[in-house]
Image (cartoon, rainbow, N blue to C red; front, side, top):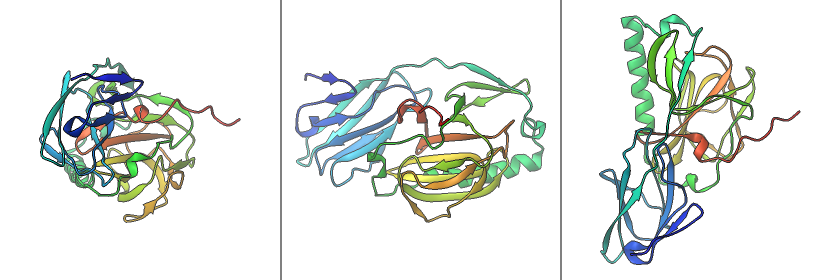
Amino acid sequence: MKIVIAGFMALLACGAQALEIRDQWQQGATIRGQVEPGSKVEFLGRDVRVAKGGQFVVGVGRDFPSKAELTVVAPGGERKVHTFNVAARKYNIQEITGVPQSTVTPSPEQVERSRREAELVSAARKKDLATPWFTSDFAWPVVGRISGVYGSQRVYNGQPGNPHFGIDIAAPTGTKVLAPTAGLVTLVHADMFFSGGTLIVDHGHGLSSTFIHLSKILVKEGDQITKGQVIAEVGATGRATGPHLDWRINWFDQRLDPSLVVGPMPKSAK
C-alpha cells in the first residue's frame, strides 16, 4: 500500500483503505479524519463514533507511544489496520511560585473535595455526543500573551506537581472568553478547589474544551453555543497566581494540546 503525504493530509486508497487524516500525528494532537460513510473506526480499544458524512475524531495524549493503530471497517466488511508514527515532543519544566499553599499541600478535607470535583469533570468528558461540531475550525478563545504551555512539568512553590495539560493565556480579570467552536455546555461549576470557575463545552464524539480559573460563567448546562459566542470571563480563581485563561482539550481521557487545533495567536488589538 502506498501512502501519500501532502501537507497535513494523509490519503489512502479505497474501501477500508479510504482514510483522510486532517492533522499531524504527534503527542498531544487532536486527530480529525474522514472515512467512507457507513464505515466503522476503532482506536485504543474503543468503537469510535463516525458521523453520517464519515467524519471522526480521536486524540493522542502527552506521553502517547511512538506508534498508533487505527482500524477502519468498510461498509462491505473489509477491515484494515492503519499504523501511524507518532512524533515525540520535549516538555519544559515550569516553576510557579505564589500559588495558595493549600492548593499545593491540601488538607484531607480539601483532597476529598477535589476528588468529588474531579469525578464531575470526568463524567462530563465521558460523554459521546452525536453532533460533529469538531469538524469546524477552532479559534483562540482569548487573545493575549501565552504564559503557560501544554505538557510542561509544573513545580508549585518548590514542590513538583503534575504536568500542565492546558495552555495559559494571560489577560485581565473580566476579559471575555469566546467559544473556540460550537458545542454543548456539559459542566458549569462556579468554584472548584484547584480550577476555580470551571466550564466544559462538548464538541461532539468525545472531544471537549475545558476553561478554568474563570471569574464568571455566562452560560448554563444544556446550552448549545456557537463559535465566537461570549461564554465566560477570565479570572484568577482556584490555583492561580494571576488572571488568565487555562484552556484544555480532551478526547475522552486523552489530554490534548489546544494550540495544535488553532493557528498562531493573533496579535492583540491595540
